[in-house]
Length: 410
Ligand SMILES: C[S@@+](CC[C@H](N)C(=O)[O-])C[C@H]1O[C@@H](n2cnc3c(N)ncnc32)[C@H](O)[C@@H]1O
Image (cartoon, rainbow, N blue to C red; front, side, top):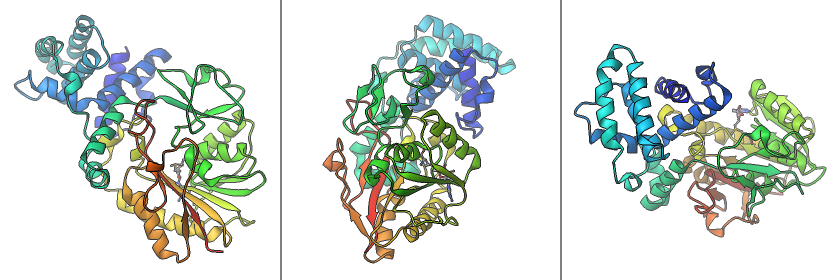
């Protein structure tokens, strides 16, 4: 059941749907099968090019897309996830037969290919799934070939679950990270973790927790959290005792901020508005701008992203980010501070964006980050902080983020 669910998800991605938007595709499956289908589909997307290399060695003609997905799923199950060849091959043949006339005709080929693929010896030596060219080229230009390969290997490894605890809260079995987050390895059901109902923590990648720490919110400060949903950073600011106004253009996504605040017994003012048009009644002490971006720093958790995007939307995002930075700066008083953050690997959305803001705003300064647990080598020449999926390789990596703390002239 989980395997056919995974194939439905993969077909959806081929049709341009994200994994997250395909809950309906798994209707009728038990919750455990739904979770396993999601894990299997994600594993295939993480290792698709490697599976294709193994399959290509044993086929004379390119299989039809649906058959290719059955083959990829079986290869990834056997060679990456350690599935027993006998059961995996039998299941793949049954799934192929279920694909109608074409499937009936392809079942023998699938059986033969997978029996040979099961004995493939060099899986671990195959290069990781490459980033698409529109992403790889700028990343390689900024960081070099070795780092690009390390990022791709980190994408293939997936992501552990990170939690941000309220001050003083610990979670049994979770690994404390140097930056203050907690990490849980292996698949878990979030709502079954200890402390979920008490709201002592929320799910947030260790890198995603850094921008709010960089802002250094103080109790009683008035802070505008622009582009706030689903609210991980809003929760951090509120937990620090700040008076937070969370602004997001999407009322539906703001409802998730409300749910998260309620579960964690925290409060913030919620405003559904385009941040570019929004002006608060009272001048904020500081602004956190977590701008909409390519989200290319989150491919570890969203392995469908490279298959759904072609990079054509980046220039419009870069333009929006620059306008949001200018507007955010207009909201804070002279001498005030803001943090700009994006979950992107692209320098155009991060490092270059801050360099351009400095050129547009004479007197604007970047304040060097010194956050506990971060490595000085993550600080960029502009004075921002760059995290990458290949950072903390022994701990399980982190999302790719760029963030910078900007100080308006006094
Ligand atoms: C990267 S996500 C924010 C993540 C969030 N800060 C957190 O920590 O959970 C970007 C958000 O920007 C919102 N957004 C996009 N364009 C916007 C705009 N013009 N004004 C306000 N929000 C916007 C999107 O709805 C999305 O929720």
